[in-house]
Image (spheres, rainbow, N blue to C red):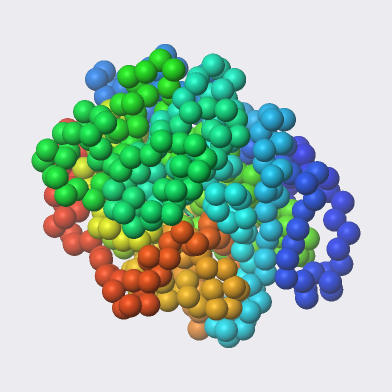
Length: 474
Ligand SMILES: Cc1ncc(COP(=O)(O)O)c(C=O)c1O
């Protein structure tokens, strides 16, 4: 049985197995919202490598990070406590959309004719439409508490930018969003949503920062990348006392905040009278994947058998083809060095529609768990991913975000492989967001204009030259 004692769940679950077997939605009461975040650092078999100061090569301390982040978040970044209490104010905001539903994908199962059972946790019910506000409201809360007036951030597809704009609006902070240029152009409606929540938004690279201007000088047509937008947002925050930087993925504290997803899913799977053999999520920086998977990895580390699968785009195959190395989190080398799977900080991924998966690195916690064999990864081509997305919307009804569609595609592959092997699996995946602001991507799909980009080896070799000479992980 899952060991969730101490995470604050009422344990009484009165559903019968018979009823659960025919049920489609598994819902929790608001009172069953997790009261603590789960910190996997307390349970990891190998600790992740320290974050290094690029100048000295020494581990960074709280003082190095203080210009960018509030102390509460710096504390969470290095905490070894297994559980961290969620402040009441954050719980109150979570209750606007949490707990989120867990569905049994019966119609998808029928459509692909699988013997396996497929469940998904749906994070698209949040006001901005994805999992991102789980950390946005927490980050905005701690920044406000410590007296910051304004936050700066980057956004890829616009999901994170809209989540932070939403959180800042509700909590009472100003917000500036640097949006990757290609997404800024492809997704004008996300831009409007960000503005509706009162944030300022510019396409990145922009002329508002030195980093942006330098890139535009060399590449006036740069489509931008998350690495470039991070440089701009960090530079913005570092240059103003009233401003902190906020990151939507990758960092330990961001992954920590997302663990409400997996904790709820554990309780909901129990309502369904099931436990997953396979847990699946898409990976950009890694936050939605970690949010669902970490509470299940806690079970795996304790001895349960679970296959944990990370799905990424073939155009940006960080986990499947990147190197585990120290690298910068951004293009202009403004961040500290982190040990992670990377394609090199100046790698600019092809402009695929899953904008939120176009990042050269990945969360160090996920990298370490991949190295330790607790997580495996696969990479998929864009046309295959969209075919699965369209199949999903035609069976389950929800039009997925292109990022989340990678998890759907991974799920369908696992189910089909199990059928071929004569196996029956229970699969749980994270549907991290809806695709209502991604209609341009679906237009391209229906017009047959989606390009399949698998990265060639020469480009990976070129991009990885950027990390030569940086410290090597121990
Ligand atoms: C819906 C959705 N899913 C997934 C991601 C990828 O980010 P992460 O790997 O941090 O969850 C994004 C990022 O923008 C997103 O918008």
